[in-house]
Image (cartoon, rainbow, N blue to C red; front, side):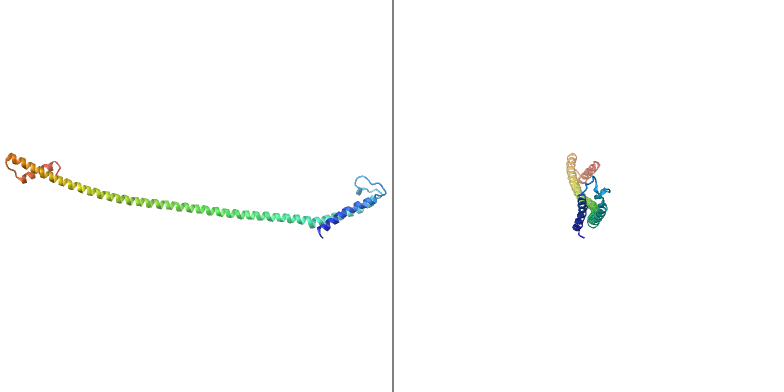
Length: 203
């Protein structure tokens, strides 16, 4: 039965008792209050059973309408809302799981990047230290070579100067001895000058 037919039948059932009561009260004055409860009225009292029957019929119709039309729609709406809420909860749970997985992946990537950065820094530091040590060693070797060359040049210059000093001192001593004694032995003069220079620490 369609909902419009059920609603029309219910309205008709509501209207029939009113029409019956209006027709019944044509000869006698109506009672005050609810005419359905006028048990002692000569006209309205006869329709009490009919009113009760129509009340039951209308109640049955309303029950059928509610059971067949209104309540299924309400139930379907509630079921749809429940399904939508459950779907939203499942989507939210799935989104939370994805967010947790993304957070864990981000944390793992951060730890990995930090470890790689520390390893790169340690490698670069070690390489820089090795390069600095190699450069320092090369510089020290070059400086030592330059110092050795300088010392050798200084020693050669000193030996040359000492040789020249020995020769000049020998010449001066020989000239002085020759003037004082009239003659001088070159070998003895050089030996005496060498001994004197050795005694003064210049040999």
